[in-house]
Amino acid sequence: MSYEFIKVEKEEHLTILTINRPEVMNCISAPTSAEMNQALDEFQEDPDAWLLILTGAGEKAFSAGMDLKWFAQNGREKYMEIMKPLKGLGGICQRVDCYKPMIAAVNGFAFGGGFEMAMACDIILAADTASFALPEPKVGIMAGAGGVIRLPRRIPYWAAMNIIMTGRRVSAAEAQGLGLVAEVVPAAELMEAAKRWAAQILECAPLAIRASKEAALKALDMPMTEALFEVFPGQKVLWASEDAVEGPKAFSEKRKPQWKGK
Image 1: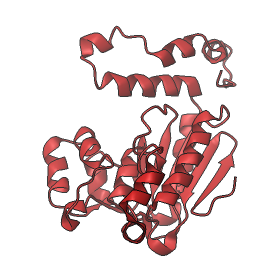
Image 2: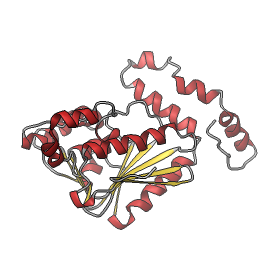
Image 3: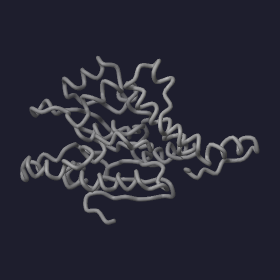
Image 4: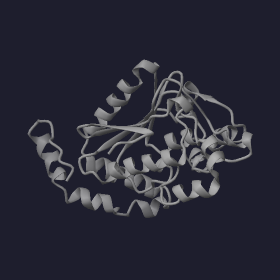
């Protein structure tokens, strides 16, 4: 499928989704969200797609957030008409049912919705020139696409609130210190680093990764004493899979496992 506002590349089991609007700092208009939603639906439904990297085109911005100019020109009614069937901003911020791993490769500004989309991924990597912010209160709104919900769950409450309540910029180095960012690298090495992380994940059984992600996310809303005895759907799929047989067999035969994702 051809897209106007994004670019999708596939390398075996890896999908790379690039927000391709560098002329407007990769801001997310409603049509951009619709395209991203479609691409993410295809990724989620494709049995051969095991992992996704989300990034932005150009050197300045991962995404500067919602496209307020598009919103002003087209109005709330048109915005809501397009956005209503989607899974949140960028098709990702409310995508709570995808247990395939997603990496955000943050190549510049991740402000507002850009930060929210990065937090909707499982691992954030950042260029040393990247920065993060939830500046919505400075223009009279709030980070309502998940920012104020996710950030206090990602880092300590007090650290989250000083970012939310001031709208200040957080450097890549500070974000790494807070545990938000897994690795900071020179900008020119960002995609190389993202693919290196992807390769490490792809060494693992894809169904095991999905089952682990599902259990981790669902258990957050459960008491530990309940979660410890819960058998989540992904676990059942994993234990009934060919990969669950292949893993121990390959280990005993001292060879690299050949994962099938089934």
